[in-house]
Image (tube, rainbow, N blue to C red):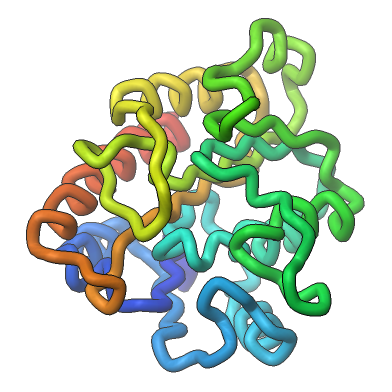
Length: 231
């Protein structure tokens, strides 16, 4: 039976944080990709095919994707959408670069891959990167009321008091992120999915303090998002 949460485990970080038991209590479907090759930062065709085949037939709306190295999972998951949707990306980076190696999907190019390869994508709103809005523009949600929304959150949008990642980070607080999520999830659009990434695995140097901070933030985000998805 599919759970109410999808967990994509590439690095074992959720177990290291102590967050995995919380997710399992929430009836999580955990996909173990810890031994999968060709998937860190760049996702080659064999890895992409393996991941796609492993996805459950019915996808939970709440998804945890591991570190930002695997943010391309948002694109692979959104390929399963069957109706038009809008993407809101909350991130310190735009993730819309040209692929560096022969068109291989990457954590830095997945937004462009979605724009080029998902005909159901209607628009992309980026919140957080330099030169982009830091909050939802006035009227953006009203203009799309009743339409479908996919929210993708990379915790590197936050400062180090609230998140520890292996990428450069922004200055948003957890409170600001939660308020933006609240407005998105209560704003009159149909929520297709919310995914969260931005962990710091032990293999990338996470120490006890890093794991503790990420656990606390994950737990807070999980409860906050879950509450609004189930209202």
